[in-house]
Length: 427
Image 1 (cartoon, rainbow, N blue to C red):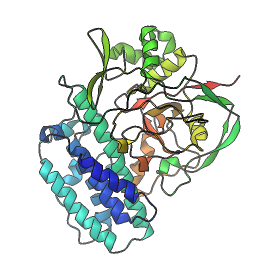
Image 2 (cartoon, rainbow, N blue to C red; image 1 turned 60 degrees about the vertical axis):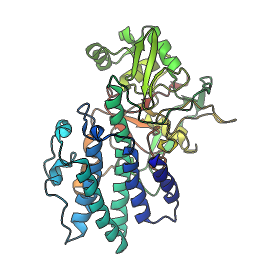
Image 3 (cartoon, rainbow, N blue to C red; image 1 turned 180 degrees about the horizontal axis):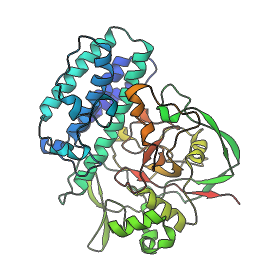
Image 4 (cartoon, rainbow, N blue to C red; image 1 turned 90 degrees about the vertical axis):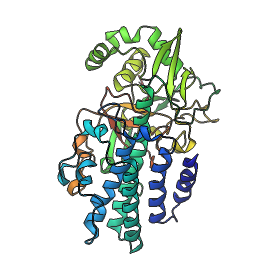
């Protein structure tokens, strides 16, 4: 598979000695590698308003470098196509009016070949710019652009799964989880109350991970692993989707209006529960982590379990000293995997596998300041009515994952690779 070449390159350039131009080339190549299993008909499909076609992801990530770097730093730069500034803008109103999000799937043109030519055109100009010398602002801008592209690589796979998972043919993209392992017994690890340091400390972070600050935590407990399909099935069989006492009010309304009765890609077939994965339709494996559940479903399951969801601060404090390892996109599984904790390991599956819902509202940290200019629209303006998720997933790049990372989605959202980790109060 072509993705292997790009993934090997990503591993090579993740070292401190790798040049920015090499990292740029590797991340950009990986986007194309992820598209190699696709047929030409797949590139233009937009299966719902929140998802985007693969062709749009390839073009938008290119637009980002052209708009925020090349046009600003290269006086003689000539844009590839003047209309692309509108077509592939996502939500940056500060640089113009974006093409309507819900209509991205209507764009049969530009063709896939034209989009690839656009990528090559911008890549050539970027390599010239990077070769002419790199000041710190340029390094910061390009690094942000690369992490932005890695976000879209993850979205490309989640959006593609929504397309394939709602196709009666259940097309196979590739991969497949490692099966056969028995999930660990669910148990809880206790943490003392503490004045915890929260926020980013590394070389790169998004603005919403700053500033680092103190948060007072009461004693709490955190589950050793993610909730499994088998445990979630018990919730379903106990009438979990029919019990309003378990649900937040908005969640119960959503269950009723959308007729939810199972996670997003589950369906009953011949008396068995089946699950669509990117390697096709399979019987639900009870040992694998449950995935593609909403924040509402996660909270209802936690209530049914006599537990709750962790706050983002509890999760970050507990994970701060744990190694960043798990099932990432580099594994080419494209699905969460059952994993038994190593000897003496109190917590595992913290990173990779599935994004973990928290009960924390996506809000600014004390003293938060968005990036200057149009890039200030990147995160700050979405700090309303969303919940924070932590840890990354099986389609997140390993080099894009860190303890302070704050993903965010609305509580009803299910198409992301989102799962559940339980927490409890200490009495």
